[in-house]
Every structure is written in C-alpha cells, then in structure tokens.
Image (cartoon, rainbow, N blue to C red):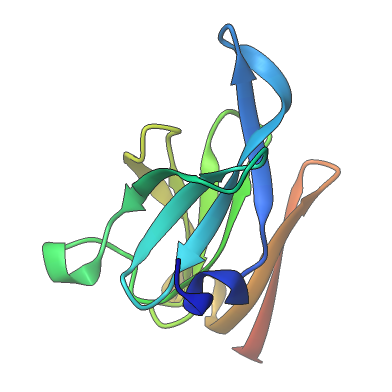
Length: 128
C-alpha cells in the first residue's frame, strides 16, 4: 500500500451479527483516486479497495476526500476538500445525501470532520 493512504485520519467502524460492535475496520481516504479504502484493524490487510467510490470522473462528489468517519447513525460521512462538501454514504458505499457544502454552509477548503455528542464539526481553511 502506498504512503498516500496514511496521510489521512483513521476511523473505525464495525458490525457483529447486524448490530453495532467494536471497530473492525479502518476507513482510509485515498485522495488521489477519489475513494475510501477499508482495511482490517487486526492485521492491516485491505478489505475493500473501493469501499466508497463516488468520483467526479463518474459524476459523483469526491474530488479529494480527506476524512471518512462513522456518523453514529449507521452511515459514513466523507469530507472532501476540493468539492467543499460533507457527504453521507451507506456502509455499502451508496451515496445518501449532501450534509453540508459551499452553497448551503459557505464551506471552503475543508480540513477535517468529527462527530461529538451527536453533532458534526467541520474545520475549514477558508469560509465560515
């Protein structure tokens, strides 16, 4: 695996018999390929090289994904620095909706996201 994967924050998610359990995989943004890769927390092997692929080349939203985190609601939130948005996906990698973007929240140059106490926090390099 290339070093480009490890430039991102690693966040875990996991399932056990259909219910939330302790984290079993890491979601790693690959900003050069506009995708999220999932790897095993146990040994680091790639579970799914295309866990989430929604690139602008195929009409999607991702142009430079920076973070992928669990929403706490059974979905994944992905921030993208170039498209200036936070997008929600299912665990199957299907786009659900745009949570925030430049037109709705004046975001510009997103640096990172985090969930705390049920709220989404977004850091930006410009904008509001």
